[in-house]
Length: 206
Image (cartoon, rainbow, N blue to C red; front, side, top):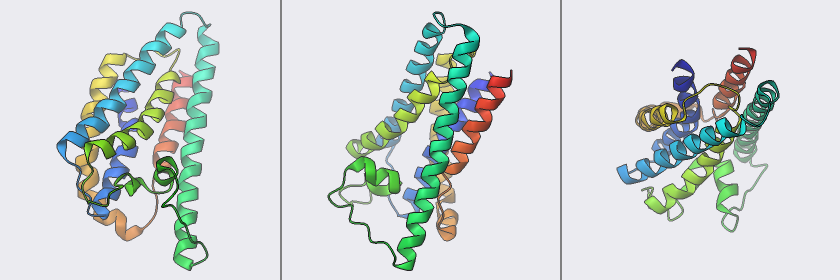
């Protein structure tokens, strides 16, 4: 049960940081949008964990566990790298050394650089349609993380339930701490990547 809780908390870190960023920008997340974000992430986490257990029956346990560790390590390193890119972009923009023209760019690129880009119409309210775009980006991580847990005895349904609970808590806590993070003006998504790397090492060593 401990692994299920830890995994659900890790996948909710990005939701927490996104909620904090929305609070900083005075963007409201209605209940319907929060449900879409959490339900989508939890579903894909359950789906990937379920299929990883099936795939694990056809691949030797040690090999699949190694593959899973490499997947988690890759996701973690990518997340840390993304955070470094965001911080670099913010620093260059502040110095006036970089001008970004993202109006015509894709929503994926926008979300990569700024979580609040999901509010496309600038209504200061995250509509269900806009929440679906944010959920799609978050679900890719949940899907990859779930597949990376192959060879580990983790209950998919239990993890999904914990993910929904931790997701709602992440939105609430993220909103409460948004203003404090805004004063620091730095990207902290690397925390989720570092936690994922440590969790992958912990599971691999067991």
